[in-house]
Amino acid sequence: MNLIPVIRFQVNTVKTLRLCLLSLTILVAIAPPVSAEPMVALQVRAGSSLIGLANLYCHGREDWRRIAEVNNLRPPYVIKEDSALMVPADLLLGDSVSALVGAARGQARLTQPAKAAQPITTGDNVAAGSIIETGEDGYVLLIFPDQRFVRVDAASRLRVDMAMRLADGSLKIETTLEQGATLNNVKPRSRPNDSFISRSPTALTGVRGTEYRLKTDDGQSTHIETLRGEVYAEAQGVSRAVPLGQGVIVRKKQPPSPPRPLPATPSDLSVATTYNSQPLHFVLPKQPGKGVMRLTISADEQGLRVIERRIGKVGESLSVTLPQDGDYFLSLSAINEAGFESLPTPAQAFTLRTTPAAPILTIAKNARFFTHEAPLAWAVVAGATGYQVVVAADTNFAKPLCEAETATPAWQCPELPFGSYHARVRSIAADGFQSAWSETVSFSLAEPPRLLSDEMTADGPIHFRWKAVEGGATYDLQVAPQADFSDVLVSAQALRQPEYTLEQSLKPGTYYVRVRGNPVDGPPSQWGPPQKITINPAPMTLAVKLILGALILCLIL
Picture (cartoon, rainbow, N blue to C red):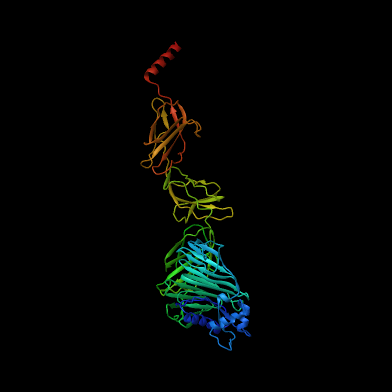
Protein backbone atom coordinates (compact mmCIF):
# COMPACT_ATOMS: atom_id res chain seq x y z
CA MET A 1 0.00 0.00 0.00
CA ASN A 2 1.35 3.44 -0.89
CA LEU A 3 2.14 5.82 1.91
CA ILE A 4 0.66 9.27 2.00
CA PRO A 5 1.78 12.84 3.14
CA VAL A 6 0.22 14.25 6.26
CA ILE A 7 0.48 17.59 7.95
CA ARG A 8 -0.58 17.57 11.56
CA PHE A 9 -0.15 19.49 14.75
CA GLN A 10 -1.40 17.35 17.53
CA VAL A 11 1.44 16.93 20.02
CA ASN A 12 3.61 18.89 22.39
CA THR A 13 7.08 17.74 21.39
CA VAL A 14 8.99 16.83 18.26
CA LYS A 15 9.50 13.37 19.75
CA THR A 16 5.75 12.85 20.14
CA LEU A 17 5.06 14.20 16.65
CA ARG A 18 7.45 11.69 15.16
CA LEU A 19 5.85 8.92 17.23
CA CYS A 20 2.46 9.84 15.77
CA LEU A 21 3.79 9.71 12.22
CA LEU A 22 5.63 6.47 12.88
CA SER A 23 2.47 4.93 14.37
CA LEU A 24 0.50 5.83 11.25
CA THR A 25 3.23 4.46 8.99
CA ILE A 26 3.44 1.15 10.90
CA LEU A 27 -0.32 0.71 10.85
CA VAL A 28 -0.46 1.23 7.12
CA ALA A 29 2.43 -1.21 6.64
CA ILE A 30 0.98 -4.06 8.75
CA ALA A 31 -2.68 -3.68 7.90
CA PRO A 32 -4.17 -6.35 5.62
CA PRO A 33 -4.80 -5.11 2.07
CA VAL A 34 -8.57 -5.41 2.53
CA SER A 35 -8.59 -3.10 5.55
CA ALA A 36 -9.05 0.61 5.00
CA GLU A 37 -10.18 1.39 8.53
CA PRO A 38 -9.46 5.08 9.24
CA MET A 39 -7.43 5.75 12.38
CA VAL A 40 -7.17 8.80 14.59
CA ALA A 41 -4.18 9.56 16.82
CA LEU A 42 -4.91 10.53 20.44
CA GLN A 43 -2.27 12.05 22.68
CA VAL A 44 -1.55 10.36 25.99
CA ARG A 45 -1.40 12.92 28.76
CA ALA A 46 -0.14 12.46 32.31
CA GLY A 47 -2.44 10.24 34.37
CA SER A 48 -4.21 8.74 31.33
CA SER A 49 -5.27 5.11 31.08
CA LEU A 50 -6.84 3.05 28.32
CA ILE A 51 -10.18 2.92 30.17
CA GLY A 52 -9.99 6.66 30.85
CA LEU A 53 -9.34 7.42 27.18
CA ALA A 54 -12.18 5.13 26.08
CA ASN A 55 -14.51 6.67 28.63
CA LEU A 56 -13.71 10.23 27.44
CA TYR A 57 -13.44 9.81 23.70
CA CYS A 58 -15.32 6.62 22.73
CA HIS A 59 -18.89 5.39 22.68
CA GLY A 60 -18.25 3.00 25.60
CA ARG A 61 -15.56 2.31 28.15
CA GLU A 62 -15.23 -1.24 26.82
CA ASP A 63 -13.73 0.20 23.64
CA TRP A 64 -10.38 0.23 25.46
CA ARG A 65 -9.93 -3.38 24.42
CA ARG A 66 -10.10 -2.47 20.73
CA ILE A 67 -7.64 0.39 21.31
CA ALA A 68 -5.23 -2.03 22.99
CA GLU A 69 -5.57 -4.50 20.12
CA VAL A 70 -4.90 -1.87 17.45
CA ASN A 71 -1.82 -0.60 19.29
CA ASN A 72 -0.48 -4.12 20.11
CA LEU A 73 -0.64 -3.48 23.86
CA ARG A 74 -0.39 -6.38 26.30
CA PRO A 75 -1.04 -6.62 30.02
CA PRO A 76 -0.45 -4.64 32.12
CA TYR A 77 -1.40 -2.18 29.30
CA VAL A 78 1.07 0.53 30.24
CA ILE A 79 0.84 3.67 28.12
CA LYS A 80 3.47 6.42 28.18
CA GLU A 81 2.94 10.10 28.65
CA ASP A 82 3.34 12.16 25.44
CA SER A 83 2.96 9.08 23.28
CA ALA A 84 0.21 8.64 20.71
CA LEU A 85 -2.39 5.88 20.50
CA MET A 86 -4.20 5.08 17.27
CA VAL A 87 -7.97 4.74 17.66
CA PRO A 88 -10.40 3.51 14.98
CA ALA A 89 -12.46 6.51 13.90
CA ASP A 90 -15.76 4.65 14.23
CA LEU A 91 -15.15 4.23 17.99
CA LEU A 92 -14.92 7.97 18.64
CA LEU A 93 -17.60 10.25 19.97
CA GLY A 94 -17.82 13.53 18.11
CA ASP A 95 -19.74 15.79 15.82
CA SER A 96 -19.19 16.17 12.11
CA VAL A 97 -18.00 19.57 10.97
CA SER A 98 -17.60 20.97 7.49
CA ALA A 99 -15.38 23.41 5.66
CA LEU A 100 -16.73 26.62 4.19
CA VAL A 101 -15.87 27.60 0.64
CA GLY A 102 -14.40 31.04 1.25
CA ALA A 103 -13.72 31.75 -2.42
CA ALA A 104 -13.90 29.95 -5.75
CA ARG A 105 -12.87 30.96 -9.23
CA GLY A 106 -12.82 29.41 -12.68
CA GLN A 107 -13.76 25.80 -13.31
CA ALA A 108 -14.33 24.00 -10.00
CA ARG A 109 -16.80 21.37 -8.96
CA LEU A 110 -17.84 19.68 -5.74
CA THR A 111 -18.93 16.05 -5.38
CA GLN A 112 -20.71 15.46 -2.09
CA PRO A 113 -21.25 11.90 -0.76
CA ALA A 114 -24.00 10.12 -2.72
CA LYS A 115 -24.57 13.21 -4.91
CA ALA A 116 -23.67 14.16 -8.44
CA ALA A 117 -20.92 16.69 -9.06
CA GLN A 118 -22.02 20.32 -9.03
CA PRO A 119 -20.24 23.63 -9.76
CA ILE A 120 -18.76 24.90 -6.53
CA THR A 121 -19.62 28.40 -5.33
CA THR A 122 -18.54 30.67 -2.50
CA GLY A 123 -20.49 29.83 0.65
CA ASP A 124 -20.88 26.10 -0.05
CA ASN A 125 -20.32 23.69 2.84
CA VAL A 126 -17.91 20.81 2.23
CA ALA A 127 -18.45 17.76 4.44
CA ALA A 128 -16.25 14.74 4.99
CA GLY A 129 -16.29 12.41 2.00
CA SER A 130 -16.52 15.30 -0.48
CA ILE A 131 -14.21 15.70 -3.46
CA ILE A 132 -13.12 19.02 -4.91
CA GLU A 133 -11.82 19.20 -8.48
CA THR A 134 -10.46 22.30 -10.20
CA GLY A 135 -9.82 23.00 -13.87
CA GLU A 136 -6.83 24.66 -15.49
CA ASP A 137 -8.15 28.10 -14.52
CA GLY A 138 -9.82 27.19 -11.23
CA TYR A 139 -9.03 27.40 -7.55
CA VAL A 140 -10.97 26.91 -4.30
CA LEU A 141 -10.27 28.25 -0.81
CA LEU A 142 -11.51 26.02 2.01
CA ILE A 143 -11.89 27.47 5.51
CA PHE A 144 -12.06 24.84 8.21
CA PRO A 145 -13.16 25.59 11.79
CA ASP A 146 -10.56 27.41 13.88
CA GLN A 147 -9.42 29.30 10.76
CA ARG A 148 -7.42 26.56 9.10
CA PHE A 149 -7.08 27.22 5.39
CA VAL A 150 -6.49 24.99 2.39
CA ARG A 151 -6.15 26.57 -1.04
CA VAL A 152 -6.78 24.04 -3.78
CA ASP A 153 -4.87 25.25 -6.83
CA ALA A 154 -5.62 24.77 -10.53
CA ALA A 155 -5.83 21.28 -12.06
CA SER A 156 -6.13 19.61 -8.64
CA ARG A 157 -8.24 16.97 -6.94
CA LEU A 158 -8.64 17.00 -3.15
CA ARG A 159 -10.70 14.65 -0.98
CA VAL A 160 -11.85 15.56 2.54
CA ASP A 161 -11.46 12.31 4.46
CA MET A 162 -12.37 13.43 7.96
CA ALA A 163 -13.78 16.52 9.60
CA MET A 164 -14.96 16.03 13.18
CA ARG A 165 -14.82 17.57 16.62
CA LEU A 166 -14.03 15.16 19.46
CA ALA A 167 -15.68 15.04 22.85
CA ASP A 168 -12.99 17.29 24.37
CA GLY A 169 -13.49 19.93 21.63
CA SER A 170 -10.38 18.92 19.69
CA LEU A 171 -10.66 19.20 15.91
CA LYS A 172 -9.58 16.41 13.55
CA ILE A 173 -9.16 17.27 9.89
CA GLU A 174 -7.79 14.88 7.28
CA THR A 175 -7.53 15.42 3.53
CA THR A 176 -5.94 13.60 0.60
CA LEU A 177 -4.42 15.43 -2.34
CA GLU A 178 -4.77 13.03 -5.25
CA GLN A 179 -3.55 15.40 -7.96
CA GLY A 180 -2.27 18.97 -8.26
CA ALA A 181 -1.23 21.34 -5.50
CA THR A 182 -2.47 22.87 -2.27
CA LEU A 183 -1.32 25.67 -0.02
CA ASN A 184 -1.99 24.81 3.62
CA ASN A 185 -2.08 27.33 6.42
CA VAL A 186 -2.33 25.71 9.85
CA LYS A 187 -2.28 27.65 13.10
CA PRO A 188 -0.61 26.19 16.22
CA ARG A 189 -2.89 23.83 18.05
CA SER A 190 -5.03 25.11 20.89
CA ARG A 191 -6.13 21.68 22.28
CA PRO A 192 -4.02 18.59 22.97
CA ASN A 193 -5.66 16.45 20.29
CA ASP A 194 -6.09 19.02 17.56
CA SER A 195 -4.69 17.62 14.32
CA PHE A 196 -4.56 18.48 10.67
CA ILE A 197 -3.49 15.73 8.28
CA SER A 198 -2.89 16.14 4.55
CA ARG A 199 -2.10 13.08 2.44
CA SER A 200 -0.76 12.52 -1.04
CA PRO A 201 0.03 9.29 -2.91
CA THR A 202 3.64 8.95 -1.71
CA ALA A 203 4.33 10.57 1.66
CA LEU A 204 3.16 11.36 5.17
CA THR A 205 3.90 14.84 6.48
CA GLY A 206 3.36 16.35 9.93
CA VAL A 207 3.37 19.96 11.13
CA ARG A 208 2.91 22.01 14.27
CA GLY A 209 1.51 25.37 13.16
CA THR A 210 2.93 26.18 9.77
CA GLU A 211 2.36 27.11 6.16
CA TYR A 212 3.50 24.78 3.41
CA ARG A 213 2.89 23.70 -0.15
CA LEU A 214 2.00 20.14 -1.12
CA LYS A 215 2.34 19.17 -4.81
CA THR A 216 1.82 15.92 -6.66
CA ASP A 217 1.53 15.73 -10.42
CA ASP A 218 1.55 12.08 -11.41
CA GLY A 219 1.10 10.00 -8.25
CA GLN A 220 4.78 9.07 -8.44
CA SER A 221 6.24 11.86 -6.33
CA THR A 222 5.31 14.60 -3.89
CA HIS A 223 7.00 17.97 -3.31
CA ILE A 224 6.75 19.43 0.19
CA GLU A 225 7.89 23.04 0.65
CA THR A 226 7.93 24.79 4.02
CA LEU A 227 7.02 28.48 3.95
CA ARG A 228 6.60 28.99 7.69
CA GLY A 229 7.35 26.84 10.74
CA GLU A 230 8.63 23.29 10.26
CA VAL A 231 7.30 20.20 8.49
CA TYR A 232 8.03 16.49 9.02
CA ALA A 233 7.93 14.18 6.01
CA GLU A 234 7.59 10.44 6.60
CA ALA A 235 7.83 7.56 4.11
CA GLN A 236 9.26 4.05 4.14
CA GLY A 237 9.93 4.35 7.87
CA VAL A 238 12.14 7.43 7.45
CA SER A 239 11.21 10.82 8.88
CA ARG A 240 12.75 14.08 7.68
CA ALA A 241 12.44 17.51 9.29
CA VAL A 242 11.85 20.18 6.64
CA PRO A 243 12.72 23.60 8.09
CA LEU A 244 11.56 26.98 6.89
CA GLY A 245 12.73 27.73 3.34
CA GLN A 246 13.53 24.12 2.46
CA GLY A 247 11.80 21.30 0.63
CA VAL A 248 11.88 17.55 0.03
CA ILE A 249 10.74 15.18 -2.69
CA VAL A 250 9.08 11.91 -1.69
CA ARG A 251 9.05 9.46 -4.59
CA LYS A 252 6.98 6.32 -4.73
CA LYS A 253 8.34 3.54 -2.47
CA GLN A 254 11.28 5.71 -1.44
CA PRO A 255 12.08 7.65 1.74
CA PRO A 256 11.98 11.44 1.64
CA SER A 257 14.98 13.06 -0.02
CA PRO A 258 17.32 15.08 2.21
CA PRO A 259 15.96 18.62 2.63
CA ARG A 260 17.36 21.15 0.21
CA PRO A 261 17.04 24.95 0.12
CA LEU A 262 14.22 26.34 -1.96
CA PRO A 263 15.24 28.69 -4.81
CA ALA A 264 16.12 32.24 -3.85
CA THR A 265 13.17 34.58 -3.64
CA PRO A 266 13.11 36.84 -6.73
CA SER A 267 13.79 40.53 -6.49
CA ASP A 268 10.68 42.64 -6.16
CA LEU A 269 8.75 43.40 -9.30
CA SER A 270 8.08 47.01 -10.22
CA VAL A 271 4.39 47.52 -9.43
CA ALA A 272 2.47 50.78 -9.80
CA THR A 273 0.07 51.83 -7.06
CA THR A 274 -2.79 52.33 -9.54
CA TYR A 275 -3.58 50.92 -12.98
CA ASN A 276 -6.33 52.53 -15.05
CA SER A 277 -6.40 50.34 -18.13
CA GLN A 278 -6.26 46.67 -19.06
CA PRO A 279 -4.55 44.37 -19.76
CA LEU A 280 -1.86 44.89 -17.15
CA HIS A 281 1.73 44.22 -18.18
CA PHE A 282 4.46 43.02 -15.81
CA VAL A 283 8.09 42.41 -16.79
CA LEU A 284 9.62 39.57 -14.74
CA PRO A 285 12.98 40.47 -13.16
CA LYS A 286 16.13 38.81 -14.39
CA GLN A 287 18.08 36.45 -12.15
CA PRO A 288 20.63 33.61 -12.53
CA GLY A 289 19.44 30.14 -13.45
CA LYS A 290 17.23 28.52 -16.05
CA GLY A 291 14.06 28.30 -14.02
CA VAL A 292 10.79 30.14 -14.44
CA MET A 293 8.73 32.48 -12.27
CA ARG A 294 5.18 32.38 -11.05
CA LEU A 295 3.26 35.65 -10.78
CA THR A 296 0.27 35.52 -8.45
CA ILE A 297 -2.41 38.18 -8.09
CA SER A 298 -4.78 37.71 -5.17
CA ALA A 299 -7.57 39.55 -3.43
CA ASP A 300 -5.85 39.24 -0.04
CA GLU A 301 -2.37 39.94 1.26
CA GLN A 302 -1.85 36.29 2.29
CA GLY A 303 -2.38 35.08 -1.29
CA LEU A 304 -5.21 32.71 -0.37
CA ARG A 305 -7.90 34.15 -2.66
CA VAL A 306 -6.11 33.82 -5.98
CA ILE A 307 -7.43 35.86 -8.91
CA GLU A 308 -4.82 35.19 -11.60
CA ARG A 309 -1.60 33.18 -11.89
CA ARG A 310 0.94 33.26 -14.70
CA ILE A 311 4.16 31.38 -15.41
CA GLY A 312 6.93 33.08 -17.39
CA LYS A 313 10.65 33.13 -18.06
CA VAL A 314 12.95 35.68 -16.47
CA GLY A 315 12.76 38.98 -18.31
CA GLU A 316 9.49 38.02 -20.01
CA SER A 317 6.54 40.45 -20.11
CA LEU A 318 3.34 38.87 -18.78
CA SER A 319 -0.09 40.22 -19.73
CA VAL A 320 -2.90 39.91 -17.17
CA THR A 321 -6.56 40.88 -17.42
CA LEU A 322 -8.41 41.11 -14.10
CA PRO A 323 -12.16 40.53 -13.77
CA GLN A 324 -13.10 43.87 -12.23
CA ASP A 325 -11.88 47.05 -10.60
CA GLY A 326 -10.65 46.71 -7.03
CA ASP A 327 -7.70 46.33 -4.69
CA TYR A 328 -5.25 43.51 -5.38
CA PHE A 329 -1.96 42.06 -4.15
CA LEU A 330 0.88 40.77 -6.32
CA SER A 331 3.64 38.36 -5.36
CA LEU A 332 6.34 36.53 -7.28
CA SER A 333 8.09 33.20 -6.75
CA ALA A 334 10.87 31.37 -8.58
CA ILE A 335 10.65 27.72 -9.70
CA ASN A 336 13.84 25.78 -10.41
CA GLU A 337 14.41 22.84 -12.73
CA ALA A 338 13.76 20.34 -9.91
CA GLY A 339 10.26 21.76 -9.47
CA PHE A 340 10.91 23.47 -6.12
CA GLU A 341 9.33 26.88 -5.67
CA SER A 342 10.78 29.72 -3.61
CA LEU A 343 9.13 31.65 -0.83
CA PRO A 344 6.99 34.37 -2.39
CA THR A 345 8.02 38.01 -2.42
CA PRO A 346 6.20 40.25 0.05
CA ALA A 347 2.76 41.05 -1.36
CA GLN A 348 2.66 44.39 -3.17
CA ALA A 349 -0.68 46.17 -3.09
CA PHE A 350 -2.12 47.93 -6.10
CA THR A 351 -5.48 49.23 -7.27
CA LEU A 352 -7.16 48.65 -10.60
CA ARG A 353 -9.63 51.34 -11.62
CA THR A 354 -10.86 51.55 -15.17
CA THR A 355 -14.09 53.51 -14.70
CA PRO A 356 -14.77 55.98 -16.02
CA ALA A 357 -13.10 54.57 -19.11
CA ALA A 358 -10.83 56.39 -21.49
CA PRO A 359 -12.79 58.35 -24.12
CA ILE A 360 -12.77 57.50 -27.82
CA LEU A 361 -11.94 60.43 -30.09
CA THR A 362 -14.43 60.56 -32.95
CA ILE A 363 -12.40 62.54 -35.48
CA ALA A 364 -11.11 60.54 -38.43
CA LYS A 365 -7.62 59.13 -38.45
CA ASN A 366 -5.18 61.64 -39.94
CA ALA A 367 -7.97 64.18 -40.34
CA ARG A 368 -7.09 67.32 -42.28
CA PHE A 369 -8.66 70.62 -41.35
CA PHE A 370 -8.39 73.62 -43.69
CA THR A 371 -8.31 76.11 -40.86
CA HIS A 372 -6.15 77.28 -37.97
CA GLU A 373 -8.46 75.50 -35.50
CA ALA A 374 -9.37 71.83 -35.06
CA PRO A 375 -12.81 70.77 -33.78
CA LEU A 376 -11.99 67.82 -31.48
CA ALA A 377 -14.81 65.59 -30.27
CA TRP A 378 -15.17 62.25 -28.46
CA ALA A 379 -17.84 59.85 -27.27
CA VAL A 380 -19.56 60.55 -23.94
CA VAL A 381 -18.17 58.35 -21.14
CA ALA A 382 -20.47 57.06 -18.39
CA GLY A 383 -19.38 58.25 -14.96
CA ALA A 384 -17.22 61.08 -16.28
CA THR A 385 -17.91 64.59 -14.99
CA GLY A 386 -15.27 66.19 -17.16
CA TYR A 387 -12.44 65.60 -19.60
CA GLN A 388 -8.84 66.68 -20.03
CA VAL A 389 -7.65 67.18 -23.62
CA VAL A 390 -4.10 67.82 -24.81
CA VAL A 391 -2.63 68.75 -28.22
CA ALA A 392 1.07 68.50 -29.07
CA ALA A 393 3.36 68.37 -32.08
CA ASP A 394 5.08 65.20 -30.76
CA THR A 395 3.51 61.81 -30.10
CA ASN A 396 5.03 61.66 -26.61
CA PHE A 397 3.29 64.90 -25.61
CA ALA A 398 6.52 66.06 -24.02
CA LYS A 399 5.74 69.67 -24.93
CA PRO A 400 1.98 70.24 -25.01
CA LEU A 401 0.96 73.17 -27.18
CA CYS A 402 -2.44 73.51 -25.60
CA GLU A 403 -4.52 71.63 -23.03
CA ALA A 404 -7.76 72.22 -21.22
CA GLU A 405 -10.43 70.68 -19.04
CA THR A 406 -13.98 70.72 -20.31
CA ALA A 407 -17.30 69.38 -19.08
CA THR A 408 -18.53 68.57 -22.59
CA PRO A 409 -17.29 65.91 -25.02
CA ALA A 410 -16.01 68.48 -27.51
CA TRP A 411 -13.38 71.17 -27.64
CA GLN A 412 -12.22 73.70 -30.19
CA CYS A 413 -8.46 73.64 -30.40
CA PRO A 414 -7.12 77.23 -30.20
CA GLU A 415 -5.54 78.78 -33.26
CA LEU A 416 -2.35 76.97 -34.27
CA PRO A 417 0.09 77.39 -37.16
CA PHE A 418 -0.55 75.18 -40.15
CA GLY A 419 1.13 71.81 -39.62
CA SER A 420 0.73 68.29 -38.15
CA TYR A 421 -0.46 67.65 -34.59
CA HIS A 422 -1.55 64.92 -32.17
CA ALA A 423 -4.39 64.88 -29.63
CA ARG A 424 -5.47 62.72 -26.72
CA VAL A 425 -8.13 62.98 -24.03
CA ARG A 426 -8.97 61.31 -20.73
CA SER A 427 -11.99 61.17 -18.43
CA ILE A 428 -12.23 62.79 -15.01
CA ALA A 429 -14.53 61.39 -12.30
CA ALA A 430 -16.31 63.36 -9.60
CA ASP A 431 -13.71 62.27 -7.02
CA GLY A 432 -10.84 63.50 -9.20
CA PHE A 433 -9.86 60.10 -10.59
CA GLN A 434 -8.37 60.33 -14.07
CA SER A 435 -8.74 57.52 -16.58
CA ALA A 436 -6.08 56.28 -18.93
CA TRP A 437 -5.42 58.45 -21.97
CA SER A 438 -7.37 57.73 -25.11
CA GLU A 439 -5.62 56.46 -28.19
CA THR A 440 -3.67 59.28 -29.81
CA VAL A 441 -5.28 60.77 -32.92
CA SER A 442 -3.19 62.65 -35.48
CA PHE A 443 -4.50 65.54 -37.57
CA SER A 444 -3.19 68.40 -39.64
CA LEU A 445 -4.12 72.02 -40.19
CA ALA A 446 -3.81 73.43 -43.72
CA GLU A 447 -4.55 76.73 -45.41
CA PRO A 448 -8.24 76.91 -46.36
CA PRO A 449 -9.35 77.48 -49.97
CA ARG A 450 -9.40 81.21 -50.87
CA LEU A 451 -10.96 82.96 -53.82
CA LEU A 452 -8.48 84.18 -56.38
CA SER A 453 -10.47 87.36 -57.03
CA ASP A 454 -12.92 89.45 -55.02
CA GLU A 455 -14.01 91.78 -57.84
CA MET A 456 -16.65 90.61 -60.32
CA THR A 457 -19.15 92.17 -62.69
CA ALA A 458 -22.76 91.40 -63.45
CA ASP A 459 -22.51 91.47 -67.24
CA GLY A 460 -22.26 87.66 -67.56
CA PRO A 461 -21.99 84.41 -65.66
CA ILE A 462 -20.29 84.89 -62.31
CA HIS A 463 -17.36 82.52 -62.01
CA PHE A 464 -15.62 81.72 -58.69
CA ARG A 465 -12.16 80.24 -58.61
CA TRP A 466 -9.99 79.41 -55.58
CA LYS A 467 -6.68 77.87 -54.72
CA ALA A 468 -6.79 74.08 -54.85
CA VAL A 469 -5.98 71.98 -51.79
CA GLU A 470 -4.77 68.35 -51.68
CA GLY A 471 -5.52 66.15 -54.67
CA GLY A 472 -8.84 64.38 -54.66
CA ALA A 473 -10.53 66.78 -52.27
CA THR A 474 -14.00 68.11 -52.96
CA TYR A 475 -15.36 71.55 -52.08
CA ASP A 476 -18.48 73.18 -50.73
CA LEU A 477 -19.36 76.82 -51.51
CA GLN A 478 -21.88 79.28 -50.07
CA VAL A 479 -22.84 82.84 -51.03
CA ALA A 480 -24.84 85.17 -48.75
CA PRO A 481 -25.55 88.88 -48.44
CA GLN A 482 -24.44 88.87 -44.76
CA ALA A 483 -21.18 87.80 -43.16
CA ASP A 484 -22.99 85.45 -40.75
CA PHE A 485 -24.56 83.49 -43.61
CA SER A 486 -27.94 83.60 -41.98
CA ASP A 487 -29.57 83.90 -45.41
CA VAL A 488 -27.70 81.74 -47.90
CA LEU A 489 -28.39 82.66 -51.53
CA VAL A 490 -26.21 80.04 -53.19
CA SER A 491 -25.09 76.63 -51.88
CA ALA A 492 -23.06 74.08 -53.83
CA GLN A 493 -21.67 70.80 -52.48
CA ALA A 494 -19.13 68.18 -53.47
CA LEU A 495 -17.50 70.22 -56.21
CA ARG A 496 -14.67 68.25 -57.75
CA GLN A 497 -12.83 71.24 -59.17
CA PRO A 498 -11.68 74.43 -57.38
CA GLU A 499 -14.16 76.54 -59.33
CA TYR A 500 -17.86 77.20 -59.66
CA THR A 501 -20.07 79.16 -62.03
CA LEU A 502 -23.34 80.60 -60.71
CA GLU A 503 -26.38 79.41 -62.55
CA GLN A 504 -28.32 82.53 -61.55
CA SER A 505 -27.24 86.13 -61.78
CA LEU A 506 -26.63 88.39 -58.82
CA LYS A 507 -27.56 92.01 -58.59
CA PRO A 508 -24.66 94.39 -58.29
CA GLY A 509 -23.65 94.87 -54.67
CA THR A 510 -21.65 93.41 -51.80
CA TYR A 511 -21.75 89.70 -50.96
CA TYR A 512 -19.88 87.18 -48.85
CA VAL A 513 -18.47 83.87 -50.07
CA ARG A 514 -16.99 80.99 -48.10
CA VAL A 515 -15.45 77.72 -49.25
CA ARG A 516 -14.40 74.58 -47.43
CA GLY A 517 -12.40 71.60 -48.55
CA ASN A 518 -13.44 68.03 -47.88
CA PRO A 519 -10.47 65.62 -47.61
CA VAL A 520 -10.87 62.25 -49.28
CA ASP A 521 -10.24 60.29 -46.05
CA GLY A 522 -11.84 62.62 -43.53
CA PRO A 523 -14.91 64.61 -42.58
CA PRO A 524 -15.71 68.03 -44.06
CA SER A 525 -13.39 70.75 -42.85
CA GLN A 526 -14.61 73.87 -41.19
CA TRP A 527 -15.68 76.69 -43.45
CA GLY A 528 -12.93 79.01 -44.46
CA PRO A 529 -13.19 82.64 -43.40
CA PRO A 530 -15.88 84.64 -45.24
CA GLN A 531 -14.52 86.64 -48.17
CA LYS A 532 -16.17 89.90 -49.16
CA ILE A 533 -16.80 90.29 -52.89
CA THR A 534 -18.22 93.12 -54.96
CA ILE A 535 -20.45 92.60 -57.95
CA ASN A 536 -20.00 95.67 -60.13
CA PRO A 537 -22.64 96.89 -62.61
CA ALA A 538 -22.05 95.72 -66.14
CA PRO A 539 -20.29 98.35 -68.35
CA MET A 540 -22.51 100.18 -70.99
CA THR A 541 -22.25 99.02 -74.57
CA LEU A 542 -21.73 101.51 -77.53
CA ALA A 543 -25.38 101.29 -78.56
CA VAL A 544 -26.51 102.06 -75.05
CA LYS A 545 -24.10 104.96 -74.91
CA LEU A 546 -25.44 106.41 -78.27
CA ILE A 547 -29.03 106.07 -77.15
CA LEU A 548 -28.25 107.63 -73.79
CA GLY A 549 -26.39 110.51 -75.56
CA ALA A 550 -29.31 111.12 -77.88
CA LEU A 551 -31.71 111.28 -74.96
CA ILE A 552 -29.51 113.75 -73.16
CA LEU A 553 -29.22 115.93 -76.35
CA CYS A 554 -32.99 115.95 -76.77
CA LEU A 555 -33.40 117.12 -73.24
CA ILE A 556 -30.95 119.95 -73.78
CA LEU A 557 -32.61 121.14 -77.00
